[in-house]
Length: 203
Image 1 (cartoon, rainbow, N blue to C red):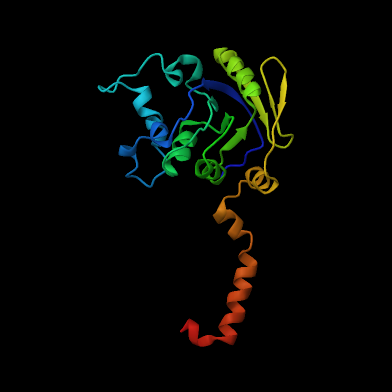
Image 2 (spheres, one colour):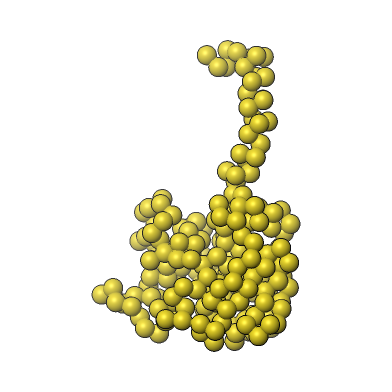
């Protein structure tokens, strides 16, 4: 998993509340187990007309936000069904941080497993960040995970909280597989001892 330390990028404003996982990646795109390629279908029913043409006023179709790496969204982001394809699609598009006042629990947990930093802020702080994000390509924000702070385009700073273990995993690029591999030596040692004590299990 890619490490997350400090991210500076354009922030796209999406002030809708209750953006669910079917809005993030509609159900017809869930047939694949490949993470790559889902970005083009991110928010598909909001981004495209029935003929496949782009909906011009959707935020990620605007020139200033086509390369957005940060999403500033309304309350209860990621609610609905527990599809891991949602953070896959966000990551494949290039979104590495989502900021909201609250997240659905399963989506929130899935973000950390896929290298995305979900940040919870107060409504007052969110309103300020949404206002900053409305500046288009001038809406560059910096998310500093080690310092646990967001720096806006005007130099203002917002602090955020994060579980220390999840912070450690993001900083070091560790998903569940990576965490297990850190203990590979102990696993090998256990298997060697077991082969000696219970050889009939390894025939």
